[in-house]
Image (cartoon, rainbow, N blue to C red; front, top):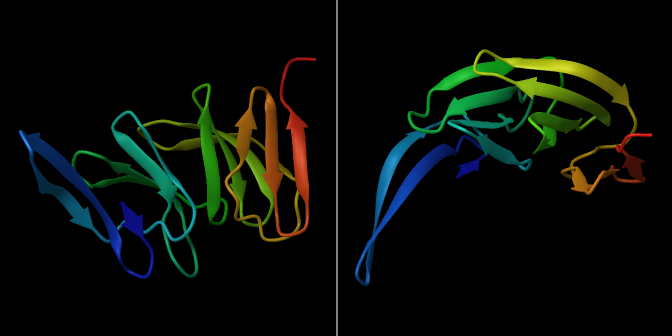
Length: 146
């Protein structure tokens, strides 16, 4: 779980024995602060835009230790989804990016400005159609082979 306003993140482990559930805190830190966007776990890394006000670099955190593995600062706060080994990222300024995550960093392979208002909604993918929106517009993009 994660929150902005200096709340930070923590990983909890739930254990159930019979009718009793116990909670163990695995780690907690203030280095990952997901304000209102989303976070996604891929393997042992959790990805998200970290920050509440001001910059919110795209950050990778080790799910087992809570250590920041890397931060990427080339675009503003963003929501994203993971499909076919890549992130489809929509930053809050309306720029759509395609990027590949690794343990060493994020490789942005393409980007295009599509929206002009605040784009705070997570992109949605249904089949090969991608839906994006800002405060005034909604777009449907066909991503299938032509």
